[in-house]
Image 1 (tube, rainbow, N blue to C red):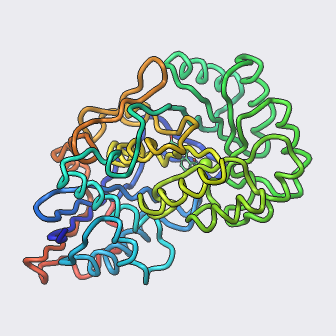
Image 2: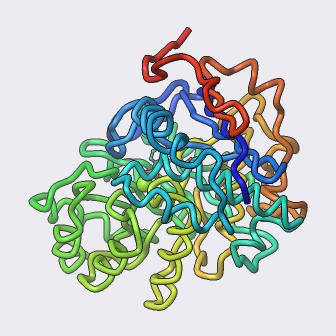
Length: 386
Ligand code: OSB
Ligand code: MG
């Protein structure tokens, strides 16, 4: 698979509704898309970094810098036997998993297209449809949250996850649990609590949650092992897990009973498969997390969610919950049973709407093996938002 060209672009898209987490509110997204051409086949990937370093240490701009200055120059013109070799070629780059993931996943899409198989198959996935859940942002008051939950349940979603933070937690969860006693319900704190809050977090036990996601520091597996021993609810780690070694550490320390896998957070499909493997070996259920992706990131999430270890509903939901019009066709849709059908066509299995992407593009750079000196501008790291 010879990498003939790489196109990096930033697109900007307004979210249909603001999304509030314990670390801030998102109104619009600045998203990097990666398009590769390898042996004549095109592949697409999405960089899932946020605009601010509030979730992890990467941002849209750090990812641009790392892809522009390091990843694209080191891959252009290279010959890979498979996309799975990408990680080894980028071994000199520490961290920056989301930047690496956007590029590696584009190569996985290209490889699947070259081989004429759906990406899910190439990854080793077995499911024909995946279970879908939703992640609901923090709201004004518990009543409006209950109304939102009802709306999502009517759409068929199999699991509801509530974002929480100190002061916007117990009352909200209590109201939702009272209104819907039997649903699969979980919460996500995005690192908003401290180990000293253990007695407070333990109050969530009475609501019979499926899990409490990432209650403590984003980089502290050990503190989660202490909290897990003090509460009944299962802890699910998100922010803490960047690779299979982290997953094994967390499992051996009993720091969680569930792990959320995000392609961006672990650096792409190759490492995601290794995390899934470690978890499956240790009977730790996994599910696919979301980062408010466009259809391209969503399509990669769907393909990954077909691996056998993904036994819990993920945060992969319908395009129309986020966007007035997505950049893929058809859009991601959810059945009335709360499932998403896995596409059967080669690659990510959705077609990319180039005209729409062009319309949203605010900066772009192209590397070509045939014209190695055609790159512009001299530095691509300055933001050029309209
Ligand atoms: O922690 O799972 C998270 C969105 C942005 C950053 C972090 C998270 C989230 C979500 C949204 O929960 C999931 C989605 O894409 O719907
Ligand atoms: Mg999370």
